[in-house]
Length: 315
Image (cartoon, rainbow, N blue to C red; front, side, top):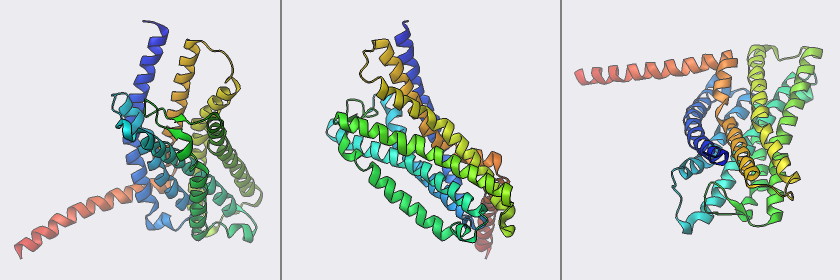
């Protein structure tokens, strides 16, 4: 078996099993995120609004980013007449999900910075109503920024690999993705994270009534930021390398290796949409407590309903 054949086999296995696994754990994790961050104790915290919005955005990336790649390994494709429309919608919704999720985490980082500031005016930005407005603004801007994908992409033979209609669209989308998803959000996350740490160290300020909750949410956020940076940095490297070496003459094996790496980094970026629940469970005591309360309340409800039904029947 040649090296090229082995690479193709490995790539096919990655495209089949990583999406399948991530769809399952991502669906479970993000549903639980939504249930937990809408509970009364957390829903009144502005940082939770960003976490909730990020979890909702993750569904778009998971369900429009992974299934086409998974189904492609079984040679399941949409009808040829619908391929172009399918490709545009799939690409557009995948990337607005990825980008929105990342920018909502940036919003959470900015919220933690505002919450820890010594100035009352800056702290006033750490409010639920402000968070909701910021989420709406981010959603609109990301939608407008990526809307051009509906005109720049068309359906290729394989639905998982949509093609750009022109060289301009290819360059524009590569740099747009590089800047607005894989470089700028992590940079801003680390800047706001550093400013938050500096505020806490220099002023020691965190609102007394929510001190413990804010600290735990901040710790959860920092872990999410590190995970986002690790999982999205490779796609930045791949995009930069692709543009730098675009005009170089490459062997068939080199092209195959580059294709494998491009596939792998996209899968990594999509994996970022499925990790938050598990990171939050590991790092946030308040999150684990709310998860336990959620499970216990469901169990109590399941126990009470049959009892009520039996009592009514006896009457």
